[in-house]
Amino acid sequence: MRQKRVAGNWKMNGDQAQNAALLHAIAEQAEKTTAALLVCPPFPYLLQAVAALQTTGVEIGAQDCSAYQEGAYTGEVSARMLADLGVQWVLIGHSERRHYHGEDNALLVEKGRRAVEAGLKPILCVGETLAEREQGLTQQVVAAQIAPFLEHFTLQELASFCIAYEPVWAIGTGLTATPEEAQAVHAAIRAQLAEVDASWAEQVGVLYGGSVKADNAASLFSMPDIDGGLIGGASLDAGQFLAIANAAE
Ligand SMILES: O=C(CO)COP(=O)(O)O
Image 1 (tube, rainbow, N blue to C red):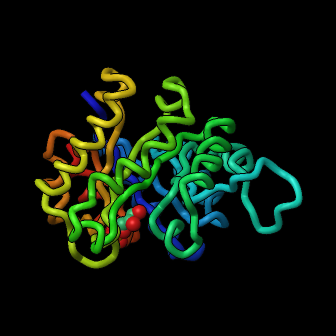
Image 2: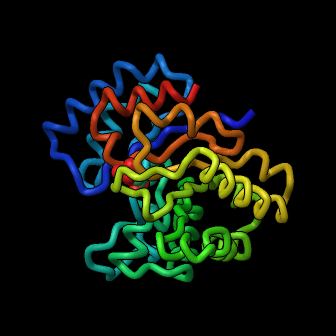
Image 3: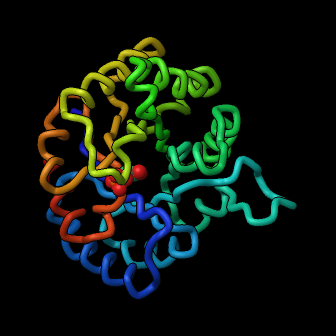
């Protein structure tokens, strides 16, 4: 049985005071959830989250990492620095990075490489735009986002990855893929992974993201190939985030 996982992507939100309250509430409740939890705060607050959650079992992820190892790359944050802080996970290829920062597959493979070298577990984010869905290209687009990773990483390296399917049209819009729509894509993703190795494909966590809320999480998470969620807006509210986590049981 794959473990259910619920990850909160805080995006560019929060400040020390707001984070303290959110982290405190998560720390208090974390023990009661059977799903594995992780939060992905902005870079400046990672240490705050590491400190607040260190005895709770809730893991910490970063929202991005540099494609470079170290050196004269002003403004970049390396995977090794993240690992040094006690961060375990890193999002790779969130659609907002692909869209606003022009991150393409070649760059994302490099970021994934740096993450794996540093011992971080990548959450590879994939998903189609509305126009792509309307043209019937969903599975093709998602497969093309995953394929470079299957090509450039060994099975042993891939074993630390999670995939997050986040249809771009569902992110922050209040529109959610129906459980059946999401399940169809998740099943296609797992079939693609099974071409590399069937038993690995059975174990990989494939999370759904895009307007997941407390009231739609249970129906999404009950689908056979949906192993939890990557939560944006609702992860900023402890009550919502924990209710979503509880829906993953
Ligand atoms: O992008 C997301 C998580 O990475 C989803 O965001 P929302 O839950 O706000 O739609």
